[in-house]
Amino acid sequence: MAIKYTQKVIDEFTNPENVGELDNANAVSTEGSPACGDMITYNMIIDPKTLIIEDIRFRSYGCASNIATASMASKMAKGKHIDEIKKMRPKAVTEELEGLPAVKIHCSVLAINGLKSAIRQWEEESGLVDPQEPIITEKIVMEALRDVINPETGLSLTKMNMVRHVEVQDNKVFVEVLVGETDEMYYENIVEEAREHIESLPGVIDATVKLTEIPVA
Amino acid sequence: MSTTPHIAYLDNGDSTQVLPEVIEEMLPHFTEWYGNPASLHQLGLRAEETLDEAREKVAGLIGAKPAEVFFTSGATESNNIALEGLRRLHPKKKHVLISPIEHASVRNVVLRMEKEGFVELEELSVDGEGLLILDSLREKLRDDTLFVSVIHGNNEIGTIQDLRPIAEICHEKGALLHADCAQTFGKIPLNVKDLGVDLASFNAHKLHGPKGVGALYVRKRLKLRRLFEGPPQEQGLRPGTENVPAIVGLAKAAEIAVRDMDEVMPQVNELTKQLADRLQEIPHVQINGPEIGSKNRLPGNLNITFKYIEGEAILMSLNYGGVYVSSGSACSSRSLVPSHVLTSIGLLHEEAHGSIRYTLSRLNTQEDVDHAVVETAKAVERLRAMTAFIPEEHSKRESEHATTFYKQRKEKLD
Image 1 (tube, chains in turn green, purple):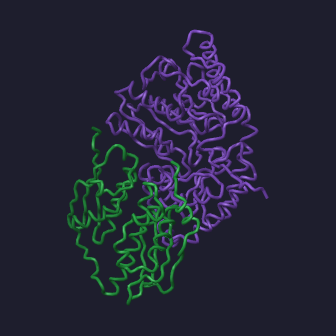
Image 2: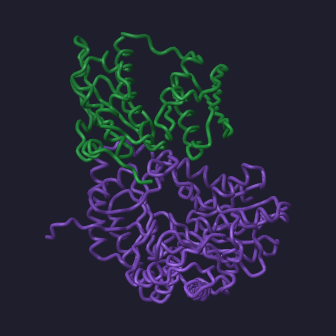
Image 3: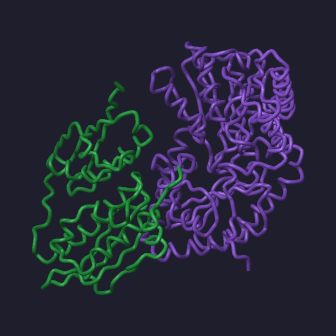
């Protein structure tokens, strides 16, 4: 499958900005992992008085669009108030890059979530918010699944109403996802991504993701 | 300095340039002798004769009889007709075996059979270079094993299987052996009778022939149920008017490949080996698959992992630098999961993600290798400078993984 990137993505990949780290960063985050093949780390300096992101650096282990989205997200975050970033949707980065192929939309989710978790970490450390309670609810699981993208469409599982059932038993989560035959080549990816997103929730020990195929009418 | 940037096409494992001689041979079959081989008039007869000649030629090149050669649209179709054709004819034989490093055109066919409840599917084991472990075959074969399918030359890591002993073990148990020879045809000497296979798939576009044409070898007296209905072309196995110009191209390309093999393949191997040696000067790399230039390695195939960075990003950097390759990373696969071939030979996901495959052909030059070395070194250095991957954590996981992987494999075998 040839991947067709926009010129914006190519430019951002070949000449990314804000690469590296900051010695005096007060907010840091790492999203993703080497095993998944994409990982972004952010270093930020948040001004405690103005709540403005004064400076930001990123590192990326991932594909061309991972690097491009991380670079673009860092440029968009620089100089902004943290509240603005907290409201930011992955779509904002995608639009700034003049589009991403559907199979690459998950990169924009990773890039934005990385910004948000750096801010969250800073807020927790500064005592502005309480650390996340490790109480798992169906709602929290659904929110995590909002970040899982069906690579076939580039839309999230929740947006596509693919999540049929969520069950939480203590620290174990069971999820049933409805899939159609057109998604077949992504089955393994959808299960892996959903599991990873649920298991990264604080307090979750084990997530089981079951796919149920909807028969072709 | 030339003004046009140099392009090094090093993806010949995906497809190749069609040789001018092949095109020349094909052309009159579009414009002059365009009849349907099934037609009764002179042009039909001419087309039928052309088809017979091509069949004889291909049969001769693989050590088969002309009646054992069926033309198809390529190795994917050949694989489907072979395996699904057997399955439909033998509903009582419920067990099938494949190697864990099969191409999707075999793997997905048997996965579908299993999913629909027709067969019980088991995977055989391979060693760290992708060579089939014969004991795993001996152990897993059953009385109701219908077929075993093994890829002759692996498209990703270049492992060439020694099919003869595999065939003998299968036949002792009454199972059939199918081999996907898409990558080996025209690159190494190949004789279906010597290999002992019952069915074998071939194609043209990996050996400087046209796309969309291939062949299936079916041992004499072995029957298959056809997959499509229509007029009885190809002895009724593959209905549909034969693609005569493409079949002519297949025969010609194969003829040239076999004719020049002794001269060309050592040169291809020489360049590949040089590329491998020079790329290994880059720190933190590993070659995947058997030793380059050895008898178990497909000529021209080099698969290498550049640690701590991701393959699609390397591939794209090389692309913009005029070097065309492929990768086993999740992000460059259609299904967004890392290559099952690489994980089957024990690679960690992150090692599979960092893999790049260079495949050379007779048309590659010293300049291509020089260009690829320079561009790769540049890309790897740039991407490593911005990677988020922390090598120390990786080495810990790597050693843990190696321990469990080989322990599990040993347990499987014991």
